[in-house]
Image (cartoon, rainbow, N blue to C red; front, top):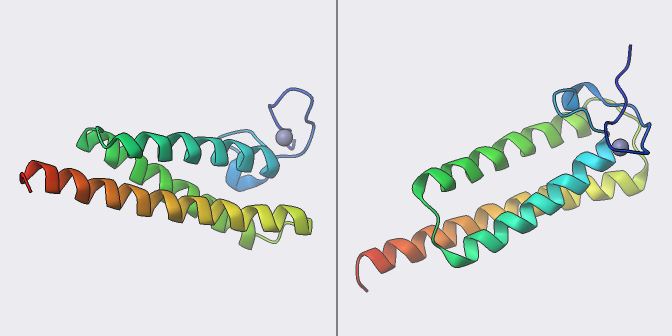
Length: 113
Ligand SMILES: [Zn+2]
């Protein structure tokens, strides 16, 4: 039996790459954008532990992989959703850049420059 999205009021089917999350493509993207925003704000402070950086990097890799599976698995996606997937990739790339910048900033601080 096909799973349907766990978000209240949404009965859209869940594609195979998202079965562990039990959300539809749209709600996966909404959640992804919110999480990326929150993580980006977090990187601004530059006070994360190395473990937190690793966590964020793992998050980026995992979501990027899932997004590419969604976009290449032959689902019939509306153009609007396709555009949103691209925005999702962009958010992940920007987050990764922010993270790298934050890392080099804190390395500079530690070196006392
Ligand atoms: Zn949904």
